[in-house]
Amino acid sequence: MDASIIANLCVYILTWNVGTHHPDDISMTGALSLDRTSSCPDQRLPDIYVVGLQEVSTHAKNQLFNIFHDDPWTFKVSEYLIPYDYIKVSTEQLQGILVMMFAQPKHEPHIKDVEVQNTRTGLRGLWGNKGAVSIRMTLYGTGVTFVGAHLAAHDQKLAERIEHYNQIVNNHHYKTSKYRSIFDHDCVFWFGDLNFRLTGTDSARDVRSLVEQGKLDELIERDQLLLLRKKDKEAFALLTEQLPTFPPTFKFIEGTSEYKLKRRPAWCDRILHRVQELRNPDIVLGITQLSYKSHPDYVLSDHKPVSAEFLYKIEAQTQTDDKLYELMHRDRRNEAPLANSSCSLIPKWSHQLIKRTKAKKRN
Image 1 (cartoon, rainbow, N blue to C red):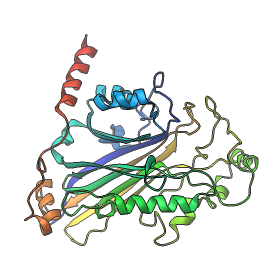
Image 2 (cartoon, helix red, strand yellow; image 1 turned 180 degrees about the vertical axis):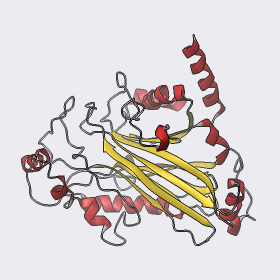
Image 3 (spheres, rainbow, N blue to C red; image 1 turned 135 degrees about the horizontal axis):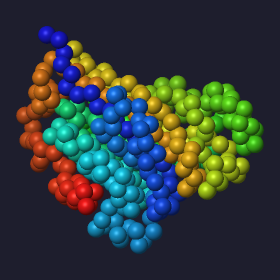
Image 4 (cartoon, rainbow, N blue to C red; image 1 turned 60 degrees about the horizontal axis):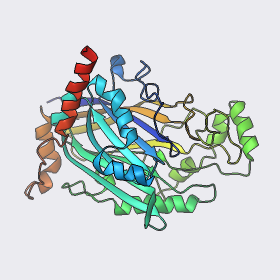
């Protein structure tokens, strides 16, 4: 019996360190590739959007507002996606680290077991200015998690970045059966301001000169994250990254696209992924990366936004994702089910917001 395609999902991930700025006058059209620059097949819009932000304003007034309402950045992204009928699946925030997920309504019945989690790594785990937040779910019967992180800054803090990574991996715990930790998941997306810099003694001017000459290959060979991933078991070795072909996304003079030479330019903003090799021969999972780019026109902060698109393909010798769900969870299916584990956790108000937005557009 040939395998059936359960799902073939185009997933769009955006990461951006917004430098505590508000999104008041920002257009998200380019950052979300809503200007017909998406790489999804057949020029269609992504099935899923996941946006990860760092250094979101943590002013006391904003924190009080966020207790009762979405963060202003979530409102901003919603403003651009809701008119295209996207619904908000979930958001999670740890101080300045924010992750939000939106999906097309047709996928709602196939999104289950939604959970959020966070891990603090700042000040040895006492403060949340650094760390990670995640949104995990059962997506068409498979376990998928999206991890947005902000790791230790500065060239000399490589060891601390490695420590932060391991703290996140060791302390991120979920309740869903069989998918208790990040790398229990069949598919993992890890993104954020990971703050990896360049090895070597080049000055900031030297690095800028190489960028201006287009010698990016020469620079990326000395990228800390690339070198680290080649070392087994230290950090990020389980993840894959398509190497950046765009200029370093940090550090810029705010309001410009000129590097601020107080720091050496570096690829701080990254998006990595992993798909699990399943032992069951009846199930085939695959990820194809469609794009990896920066958005240089954005000058709000000292970072440029970075996006990536992926095609997540799920094939199995079954006709439905419900049967696939049972197959993926069957080693623990006798456990008591979680509340709402068999239904979508997408809030009802999101559907109502779609209707109101469409009504406004008609008027």
